[in-house]
Image (cartoon, rainbow, N blue to C red; front, side, top):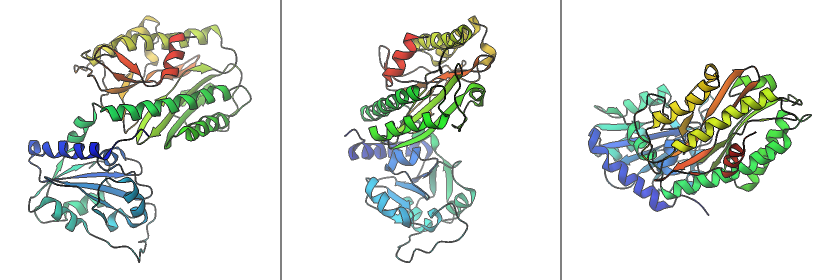
Length: 388
């Protein structure tokens, strides 16, 4: 089975601890919940449902994982760490009442933070801006003299280049996503609803091993202009542009695929529009290699749209990083001066929105190598290379 082994989680913690001296930290709190899960998954392999969680990392030694009672057994199943504790602040997030857990044993933020800091005062926090204000207030007031330090950069820097195991997880997510997309294209025909086509894709992906379907963005006809609209009961008509971004999660790692197409028979004008997207994707691939300045890639993609007088429909940069989040660093614009690096995993996000012939986008995954790039979503790459 393709997964992240315990030894890699241990190595991540060691590398995080090695970075403490940069910000003079005595400990680190990594927050996560059902929606902003990526940093917590990176350090603990845990993805909360209903509740919240945090991994508290001391200067030396093993982390403490803090969660809530309903998910305790689930956390023990996923988490590589053995010191798991419950705190009331992390209990079910969706109701105002205080839920009773008569069989649960609770710790406290004061006790956990004290155990991690070991007399120190500087607590780094990753996910500060994802955390509800009342919980952040309780963290800040857990101990007298506690100093909170924003520390997102520690994990961001570690996550930007992927390990071999992470690439393998993204490759598997991409494989599953491609299978789902093939089912979607076969189902997204005139007379079917957007929801029917979505169901075909999601069912195939789940059966193939998807841990989750983070989203399916779907628009046909005029609904392509929603950019990130969800599928509806709308019936797909002959000759309509179809825009679908399909995301698959495997062991926490997310691959998103999107291939622009027309249901039924495409007009010549639609073919010209799609051809510009495919041309831009071909140009982009030629820039995806170690050492290439990321802004140069962005400018090269934009030049294709300028050539075809389509630049007014270009809404945002054409590439972003992927990993435990659907979109993460790197996320370059045309002014970016940093180079692409071997081991970075990225997704194309080449899009044109608001055009008379419809709106659409290309999304496919790559891992940057020394000499070029490897497709993580090969069937989408083949379809884009084939063009209209």
